[in-house]
Length: 120
Image (cartoon, rainbow, N blue to C red; front, side, top):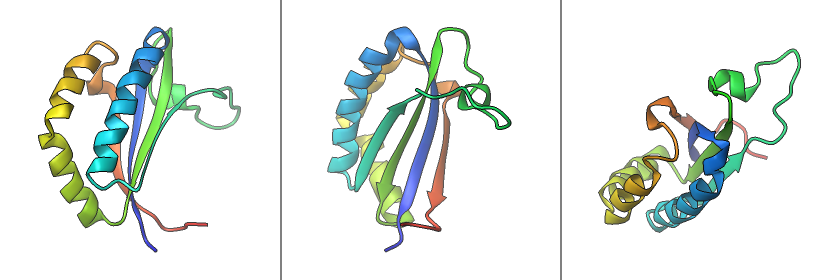
């Protein structure tokens, strides 16, 4: 069954990861309440790669920052679009935005929607 994925790459100061995780757990509930089939937040662990572009370089991390790679899975793009409208209107999001404003620079967050072309 086809799915649609929203993906995020976020440089986060290492010192903020615990607080970021706390806010992300709240966010996961909002996304799931509005139709996400799955929601993941992952912090960089094995970032020393050779002959490829490592995520920290791609995300232009600064000293003391780590990459968070996140995604939410939806049934379809239509469901994702509907969910995102509801998520952005959800009052819990405004509160979380206030909580997270000092955790990372959201202007440096990369985001995109992806059509799944292989699912195994």
